[in-house]
Length: 464
Image (tube, rainbow, N blue to C red; front, side, top):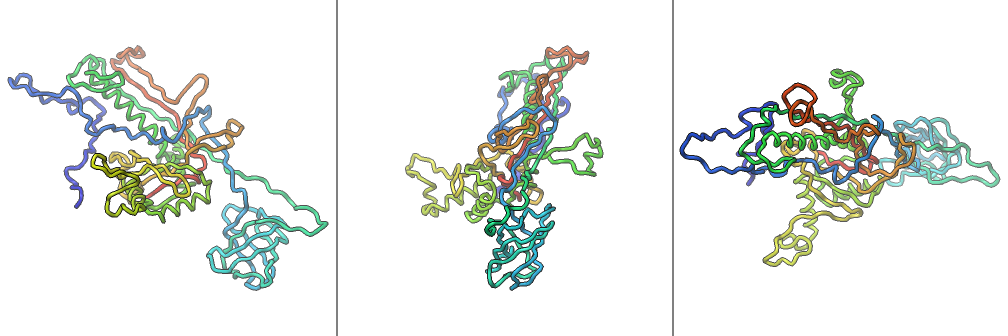
């Protein structure tokens, strides 16, 4: 059995650019002797239609005086190369190792250091420990500690990491020094705008349907459209930060506006897909969650994490946790319940612990059919996001000092004379405005902001 596709949910926009008769109920003929019973208020058939909630739960908002935000994140403390090769065959006592890792320009390995070398394919017994005897560019010479010499072949792909050093008595100290090489990231705020316009004449027209507006219940229809414009703009403040992508060289966006025009930005989804961790599909078994946990062990190992998921993934997690209960097969118990006749059975979970704490929350944006909820799996659908809770220390390049920031936060433009976090103003000659001779009231909205993802390696995105 399945849900019948018809009748389905309505996707036709209820907002129009101009005032049309379709925006109003006009099928009442008051010259008819039989008047219908009417409800004087709207019914919220779609409930709370806003999709904004994610950033309010996981982020903070911080001001910024520049249109470029830069921060510095620590690199790895220990040194490891994963694309190396030996120039010798197995059994040799010495060898020269060549580093081919992308981005490596010189070997951060020094004479006298001791290294572990192993076959990345995981072949049993193919590993050695050695001391470095010479270094030149991206190559270094080693002498093996094992009497049998090198265990792998010259065709094997090797990984190397440093575990210490050894020097003879009466020798000089370590030659050379290592300089910390942190990663520097940046992002730029984007400017968002919207506007609502109504003529002065329509503002004087009272309706008979009671609507909810910013000013409270009223019969002035234009206040409904004004309020929905604000609510829609509020949603876009969040979804634009989530969905923003940088404009690529040669793209139509740059060609249409020039190199200093619409450059895009690094949105949350783009950043995590690029620099974070990606899980293909929806994790719904303990084995799949174990692979996520093992990856988190290799990253920042943040103790507490929040998982924002769509409905299908939420059900999958609930079923996974319920299956751990020995009574779940009969459908009698999820967790600790009295199972009495007056108690409703709760079939959902808000979190679990397995190595780390995971707090689960349904994400309306991923379920809404007018947004990402209507996307099929093969068109970039996202099932959820795992975000670390708490804060992290980074070096703020603009401030020139260390700062404690939430892993995910919003930066908006602000100075002593201008605050662009959320601006709204009225122009025209109606509704109290006296800025022009145009017989309208224009309500303008503007914000300049962007999201910053610190330590993207601690995030997970669940992509179809």
